[in-house]
Amino acid sequence: MTEAWQERLLDWYRAEARQLPWRGLTDPYRVWVSEAMLQQTTVAAVLPYYERWLERFPTVEALAEAAEEDVMAAWAGLGYYRRARNLQAGARHVVREGWPAGAQEWRGLPGVGRYTAGAVASIALGEDAPVVDGNIERVYARFTVDDTAPPRLNGRAWVWAESALVRGRAAEWNQALMELGARVCRPRSPLCGECPLAPECRAREVGTADRLPTRKARPTPRSLNLAVWLVNDQDTLWLRQAGEGEWWTGLWVPPMGEGSIPLGFAGTGLESVGDLKTVVTKHRLTLRVHRGQSRTAPASFHRVPYDQIAERATPAFVSRALKLAEAGQRRIDL
DNA sequence: AATCCGGGGAG
DNA sequence: CTCCCAGGATT
Image 1: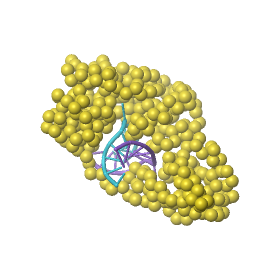
Image 2: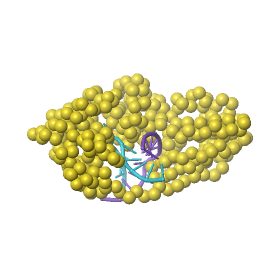
Image 3: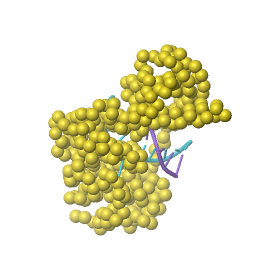
Image 4: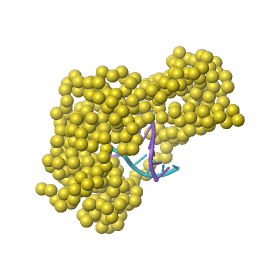
């Protein structure tokens, strides 16, 4: 049976939910794409990508038949690029075998774990499947004052989500909990005064909401220095596809490394134009950006016209490096 | 349960 | 700088 606080949250969600492009959809493909993009990624970051993706790959068949290069280009800038490859591999699986019938079958697709399977099954299939994401884990920790540290907290949150699930309205319920975590039960400065669950929330009662969930001491990321060379030939830039086991596997990257510029460039004017910082999982990278010209390059490199770089699958740092090089150029011209 | 996966953006 | 994001896979 549905309790009063559950009805209150559902009412709050109906009144306060953000209008997002994937809200209200029941097409499995569209729900799946949204969940894949949203993994470890903020809603704001996904917004510019979601509809563009659906225009380019409107159906699961279109995605299955697309060239991997186009798929990666459409994902470029979102990070965790394995998600895009998994999504296409999953699309090919669906075209071959048909749609998974429920959460359990969804788990069989690459890149689909307990969360994503529950999300797609509840939202697209109407199945009574719970979900736990970072938002719901936080709501749970505060609602029940559970100071268990992650990752154990996650398992306890799943038990709670299963028991709290409003049967028959799982799609709405799951999204309501996530929306509450994102908008009201925020990581910092939770808005307990606006929370529909405040009367029942134990952290609110005790006054420890902003200290939950317990944060786990994070190992300090390892710092690493890399050099990047933006080497052009006329109106083209030398790029290569990063190989297996390298950073940004499969994406187009400029020559880079810890030492000097790779052999094979007959470079001139290789000047430093400044530093960039980026983070790759547990590494903090400082990229020293250089620019120069060369008519030749190792065989793995291709000339990419400047006006086509934006259409290639490149890591986010490439456009930032190009901007830096332009600024450096302007300074030199002075 | 712990660790890695090899990103990125907001504040 | 720190935090953490609608996580998944591997060991």
